[in-house]
Length: 441
Image 1 (spheres, helix red, strand yellow):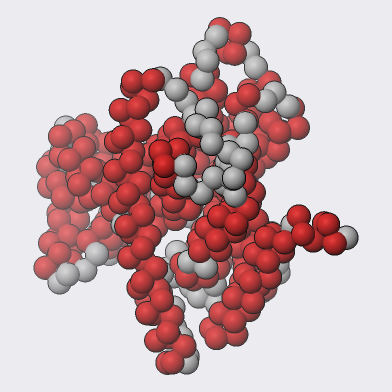
Image 2: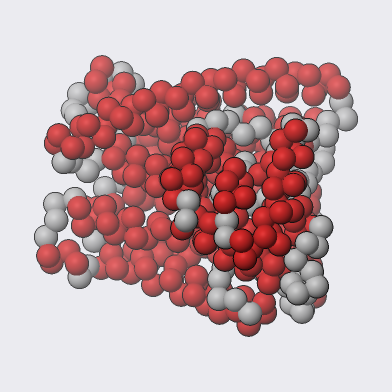
């Protein structure tokens, strides 16, 4: 028993410290938080409880709402479970760092620093899917960075397939994961034989989950898509060249430009202008259902983008992609009752956000270095795997939607820090286990 405790003291110490920190935060905050996006989750949970989807408008996928449903829609219980998820996430972060040949001590302090990042605590108090997504992403990366591409174990592929399916049911955006995983597997020491591999198992459940849900949505709203948001999100990318769309879409363009200009003038978040077009019923009486309106938004967006590709890519890079590298702050959406507690939290949060912003900037600079290294040595290693996922997410998110893009980086911020640490370990032999002086393979 003594030997077991000594061998696992860092894990137990990590869990104990996080438990105390989360308990302290919960007692100081003592409530749950809701953002504008929470409404759709709560509405879906109500539909699950009533087993009645007659009012379903295609707003959300079932992954996160089903979890809330299993917790009886008890929002304080959801917060407590999400805090537990945060501790499990930290466990996988620690194990990942140890597997990457960081010393237990370094893995402990890096994980503790990352897990005590207040944005983690903030998200855990919200009726939002970010904490659940962070947990699943962390488990997926734990498998991928643990010699996954050298292994051919059916149980690992099945577990990954399940995890990816759940991720896709939480957020369909993650549909690119199995394709990227298999592409990296093929690229790493390519051979024709690898085209038929046990790793194809990772496609089975994700594809089944995605297409089954799309079929359900089509049955309810008339469109074969995971949610009704895609057209609206795509239209958000047209914000700064909205007036350049085809004249046949003037019924969308005119109110869109009007709201955009008003919001820009007032210093508001203009990415929400297209939502005001929907809210103002500017497509009525021909289009009144949310799904029909967003479908028209999608048609308008595709036509506008097709005829203005230069503008599309320019703003996708300078707005959507650039915003991904900022740090999104959830605190303004929270209400603290204790002013003293709120002040302390505010100071700590501001310092942490600056540190994370610096680390994200360092990661971005290192990305250019490793791109050069990839072109030079053509090696797929741990860092390349992380770069592939993080940059794929940044690029795809930028191409699909404009607005609060910094929030979409949240599941990847820890792994950006890992890349920075791996660079220091590889180039300067910092943070390694005492017996480890090897280069990354």
